[in-house]
Length: 459
View: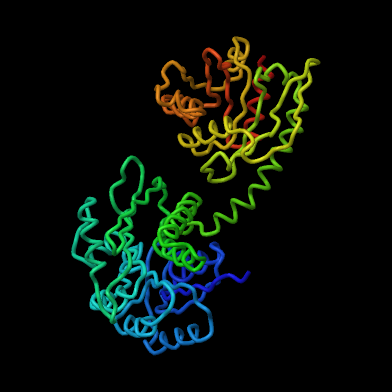
């Protein structure tokens, strides 16, 4: 099946993190074919925009005529449009388009440079916004467009309604507004966007805040992902939710690039899929090392042992691999690994890894071992730092929720420790019907196995 064609009408970012470069990478990662009309050339990097060159409006129009006349475009987005003549030329050609248009009203770069001439704001309001299926302003852009400083839900609603009322080009106004909350206050560590439809329906879309400085091009990335999802046939609310998930993963995977504000990692979904194969291979190698460890059987609990390893940027149990048949002990003192590794094979150990990583992001691996006086003494002799939790302290509502105790206990033990990053093991004394357990944590399988060998040597 051929990928749908999606068009970006935006500026070029020589640093590659925003503009058409971000859009085209995002289109490809959604499974769409990207087309571009360049409205401005910028000289920029992660620290500053040092120059802007806009082509004549006639050339922007010529680019648009070329792609509209030859490609079956299923959706489009606009970004940096720079000046009123370019906005008018683009709007004239998109006014009769038979595909949804996402308008990202880019006004200022991440580094603070003006990307829309002040006198062009009215042209954006009157010519481009009325054509949109969706407008995606951040809070500063909403202020620029409406004069409303968004500080709470009511002012957000007012700003969205004012944008929805922007009419022109023979159109009644945009179909919806996505007011992005990334510049606003967080609520319990969540970032909330408000999607408001012209019908009056409102939808809050919340995702956990990602603590990263590398946010250059996030608006471009989100609007491009929404356009691509619309081209793939998603309804608007679904397209926004999927695009938000994509951006969230890209932000979690973002890395420092240059001396300033780097971009989100647009290839994160591809890399996560590719790396999953390496995770399984790492566990297979770990299995061989486990089977060669003298005395390992003495550490295998009654409920058996398992070694869990997360793929990069894990979000759910399915992102953590473990051995499908656990690691068991035979009557003769031998250790057996009856089945190979698979993602989602152990929800219990996956929850331990996810909960630990929520407190100490470097944790990606864990193994459970027998809890008794001998093992606890060896843990101390080996110099492995421990954190503890007591199931008697577990909140009732969590205890009643199946499978939540390990998440709560691991998170509670690490959070209460004065130096969570130094913890090597979480000790769980158990309770009636629950075997006590020690769970050793580490950065990867090699780190956990090295700690396991230290523990065995100290027994």
